[in-house]
Length: 346
Image 1 (cartoon, rainbow, N blue to C red):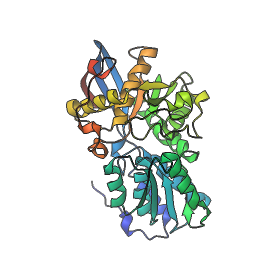
Image 2: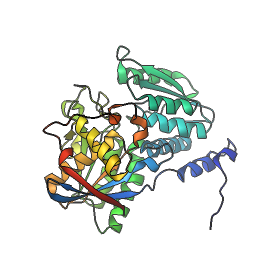
Image 3: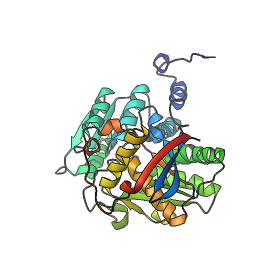
Image 4: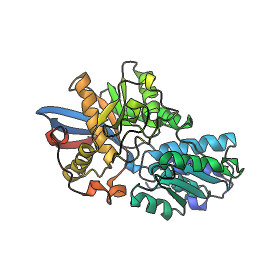
């Protein structure tokens, strides 16, 4: 029987706890997919969380909600404060959506080479967008501009790259959901892999999975064209938006993780195109990268190992990028050797 609930828009601005409760019902508890395929003639299954079902369409909603909940509890944010953040896209979109729902003005600093869809989405939430060029410092310049506002008493900076409430949201949320959903399929996680933007996902999920089974392998992923995690600094240009943002975030502890997995951005684009065109799963480029990375981790363990990963967002934010174009196939790519067979929700 359908039961109506009080809409967020009708909740008074003073009642932040009810607003947060309302938003919590729209974030998390996302589906877990078992994606079946043949890879170089072998039957393979990879488990992936479909995060596009969150409020603003990406996994970053989890982190944004977790940070805001903690900030309200500590008093770090007050009604009417401005939320200001440096972002490559999905985090900004998440804070735009949640910030406006909570009644906050939002200002976003973002590198000017991100997709136009991301910028348009943020503007649709009424956010103030400041695009930062490479000459102005790119991503690091965007962070510096956001930090310059910190002296104002009416500005809250989430500081996604250093805020420990980021991985905590994934430890208590994403990680525990993976454990529960794999258990329904009669499995436990042998490994987990995720691209590193802030690092909150891989650190938080890793902590939860390691607590449940100390032998679980936790792997960060980066583009082979720009191996920031491997070298410690930005070394090249890549097309997997949302990962490898010129530096290693403070919340990332590489010593607590297994080896870094590298995948090509072109291979990732083709894989994302196949997930959409063959299975009807509309996903972004990082999702294609994560699936390829999960197969690589499976190769390191065994072909039937239960490897979990993240389909971070949908393709709608990338229709102006190379995701919507024909990508040349290179000899070393994995994606041409993958035949997708189907998926089921577990």
